[in-house]
Length: 333
Image (cartoon, rainbow, N blue to C red; front, side, top):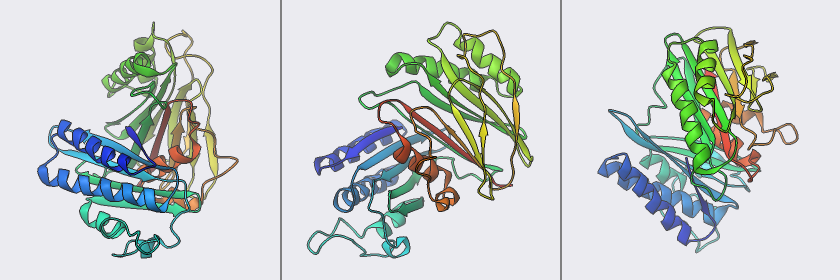
């Protein structure tokens, strides 16, 4: 995922150009590119004029039959006092004579294929999809992963993978030691092994990934298996990737990991089993994000789209000195 700061006017144009460059690499249609350019421009203008700590994230998606891009606008506040009113054409919090381009969020909504928003006093997260990303296909699980390299790097050692194995969804979040392109190469090795293990059990998947990572700089990882319609999930963790389950009643349960380094230990970790049901939320994070115990997020956030949840946690919990990885999953049934 690409992170673009928005703190002055020229960065809005730079973000639009970068979005169009990425759109070209995934063969986004001409109509989708036009809408993408307008959405990025409008979102960037709103960040600059109405908020602090503005940032735009771009996530291009390409498959054999579809292409699309997620655009995420993030800020540090002051938040929208009334989201419903902000969606109306002509709404603005700017002073007279400082109205933003277009008609605000209402215009963005009309130009997008999907839109979700969360706002409170700590900031606003706007997620917009242009084209078809495949994220919204109906199924038993909603999932979203977000990985941002350490500031100053184009790539990093955090990586995530999501695969569907018949009656289950399996997720991996990995944090390779170090930063930059070398760490990214090792991370890609781990992801390739995870995806190549499709159809294997949780234990065999972890072993396949560990074998692939032997001789690398090492990593921490957490792999989770969620049976569709099941009441439990199983997990295998090594190192300091954090897992947490937020139940529908608001209770929280941690997922333990064994000490060690993936690919550097002959001792296999043991799988753990945890309660899991409809509307429960799985949160996986690398150590580039702080825990949320001191400043917990409002409960309303966790009912939003899973990508909105992931982006908000990234914005509010990131340390700023490491790669960041977060994966969110929710059971629909």
